[in-house]
Amino acid sequence: MELTDYLSLVRKRWLLVVAAVALGAMVALVVSLVMPSVYTARSQVFVSVQGSDTTSDLFQGSNFTVRQVKSYTELVTSPPVLQPVIDELGLSEDASELAEKVSAESPLDTVLINVTASDESPDQAAGIANAIASSLGQVVTELETPGDGGASPVQISTVRTADIPDEPSSPNVKLNLALGVLVGLAVGLGVAVLRELLDTRVRTVEDVEAVTDTSVLGVIGYEPDAPNRPLIVQESPQSMRAEAFRRLRTNLQFLAVEGQNNAIVMTSALPGEGKSTTTINLAITLADAGQRVALVDADLRRPSIAKYMGIEGSVGLTTVLIGRAGLEDVIQPWGNGNLDVITSGQVPPNPSELLGSRRMAAFVEELTSHYDVVLIDTSPLLPVTDGAILARLVGGAVVVVGAGTIHRAQLEDAIEALTTVNAKVLGMVVNRVPVRSGGAYAYHYYDYTSEEAPQPDRKGKRHLPTSAGAVGALGGAGRRRSAPRRRLQRNPAVPTPAPLADAERPRVPVHFPPVRAGEEDERQ
Image (cartoon, rainbow, N blue to C red):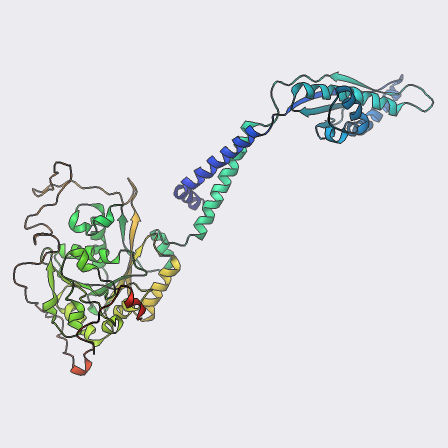
């Protein structure tokens, strides 16, 4: 990871990092308050050699003293020095316990010894330091006294007595807080990096590009109220989400569909990624641009287009495939006149066989001869094979990727399911990208300039125009026209498909047995 990646990670996981830093500082503060206060006092002694008259003797005595100082420093924590201190001050500790509170050190190339004592009582700390300095002098004098009873050549004198400390030396609250913040920051960054490495969910366009080289055709934002407004293009045509669908429409029009087949399968890896609402909104934007669009609900397991668009769903694709109705009988006009909808019809017991039949291929060919664009909503790729089967019959497939819904491995498996049957993957649509205020997908209304601008009601809410030129001129979203259904006019550039022989027609029962919820998946 580069520096920019870490900065991006901090922006993404800043709450985690801040929480770790706050926790580290809090722990450091609690520890500092719980720890007992310890005071430190220091005394200093000077080591000298007596009885030196000549310069040579003084030099030799000085060298002797410097060498001996290290030994005297070690004597500070010895029982012969500490036991008299315990007896004098009446301490409850023994020599080994007191040695843990005492330390001594000698500055380099000096004959000075600094004696340091620590205790929870400031007076006790100063008393121990001074008593040790005195006891050290007596012990050294005894050790350096000649055997013939002469005077000791070494003398230790106290040159600095210990003062009673005013402030505790431990705990150091400021230092502990600084250490707690640093440790919390390190832990927070470590956890953030670990979560980023372990998080394989597809959340951004970069995550999609890391899985496949297929182009990203569009990025659709997501807001908390999105489930309440699934048909955003029809309900709020001036919103940024609606504009994202128009950008998707523009990118889709630049695709070169193989074999001039203008039918496109819309699918996803898993349920719940928003493929159906994406397909519907894309169909509306294509129709608004003046293209003749056919929207087909080929999700024969969990159909949803009829519910979203508020139209009849009991007669549709399956009715045509079993030979009970013709194409013109199941078309339901919707919107401004350029969009025709074909619902799924009744849920069959054999959806894969129906979608892979020759009758379905002829049905798609007939649709492509009448419409500029045919959008087919299918089942997800990973649970069932319906989408892959149908994708090889058309010009290609567009995969809708729900941000934060699927993992990279699942997206790879979905793309592999299409490539295995030689279906062309036209592009990806990253759906449900979180909308951030002021960000690239910020949601707001543009100002209306036409006479049909939405007027706020008493509660301040805007309502879309209901004139004949507006979307939903049929008297409301999803309501059938009262005018007679128009007859389909074939595109002369597309040859007329040959009718199927009786032997080629799928052998499907006319009446479907009732299917309980979830039973259609168990039959696969």
